[in-house]
Image 1 (cartoon, one colour):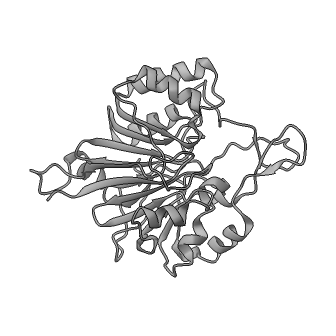
Image 2 (cartoon, rainbow, N blue to C red):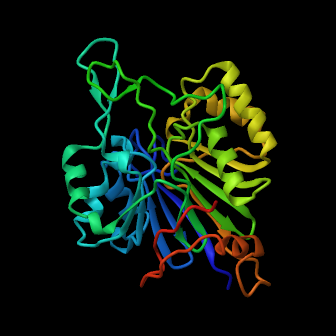
Image 3 (cartoon, rainbow, N blue to C red):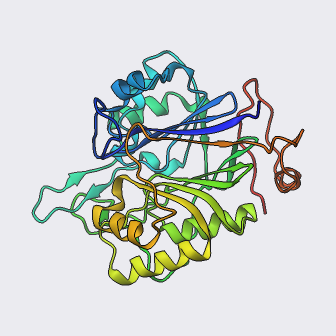
Length: 315
């Protein structure tokens, strides 16, 4: 039987099944062969109950990847740590920084990682891999690290600041995404895409050599996007030949409807409880695809007992 990649949405703004909690947050349970990766943890309210309802044992987490440090992606970390496990944690060092969302009137809203969670991470230094460049998690899973901001029409998607007075804008340099190589093509997972969906896809294409993408899942932070930005994003999705797109979380209801109308065959709804699977390798292959093998000569990932560990820059 061919090994599978499965992406199960544990927390999202909506749910695809009755009885599951919703929240303004995002978390995915990613199973690649026998390895379990928790990609973000939501606000923390929905994660434990939804995981239990969906048959996910969080104590089996081999690795955690944080897309960035906002509270709605890191709030569930204590629910994992309380299980007495020590998974590898892939995060940019700036993920623990204090940051604010600017409201119409002060006091402005702290939106960064909760201080007690940042302290807990500080105590787990030996388990943390700082993703300051493209980093390999397993043989088939990579984290982009910081994503170059090259498009003229994309921004971070909101009034984000590093100071309580909201004077210094937050570039959200810790924003990153996951890409997975499967037999059917590249799967890209987004947290919020504060770097921009197009910047993210362009960078993954550059790193992986992909000319098209099998699936794009996650938050696209288009809820505040102008009509011009949304149209340019649609053009890029066509250029990258995205086979299936599953917008979640911060994409926004109106942009989701626009994407559904413009890509009626490619669009699929997300929501907590949604599950998507793909063959990891083609059935006839006894080893991973050639394009991955050639890139392995450029990466040097230290061996570890569970096959998880950091690598260097692919350049």
